[in-house]
Length: 191
Picture 1 (cartoon, rainbow, N blue to C red):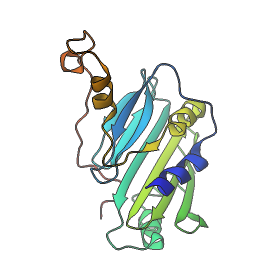
Picture 2 (cartoon, rainbow, N blue to C red):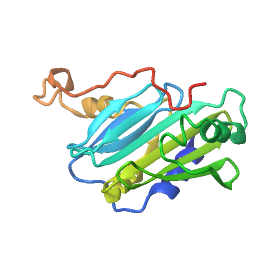
Picture 3 (tube, rainbow, N blue to C red):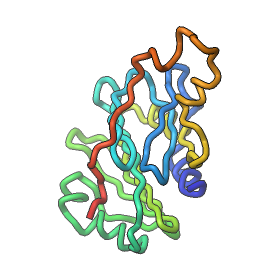
């Protein structure tokens, strides 16, 4: 998972450090959790495999998903994305280009003419996809700069924050209305 996150960071990071108005949030399947800094004015939808984000104006989008290869090779997963016109062509993507072992990239345009990119990285039994498009790619870069793989033995960001607070604190997460989006069953690569 470390190599998966490092590769995504190298490919996607073109900006500065995370915004001061961002909150660390955790997403992904139980076996491959990750954290990112989500700007406070962005909409967040947790999915079973990761997260979908949109800026407040719905002009910039980012989706990160992690899944199990189910025994498929990197090429088979890439072909799943490209040969099914219901995914690639209907979403305005070109053909998949292999950039290295287990690393593929799709480029395309949105209906409004903005560029979009999908990056697929496959390592061992897991794959990760990151799809991004929109006007504010600097914000996307800040979010992807913050991407970190979470080890299974690490506490969640909320649990770590709670442990650092004095008992009975007014900022006690048990008394807060912090958003915790429920996972749903949507998966971009579900067979």
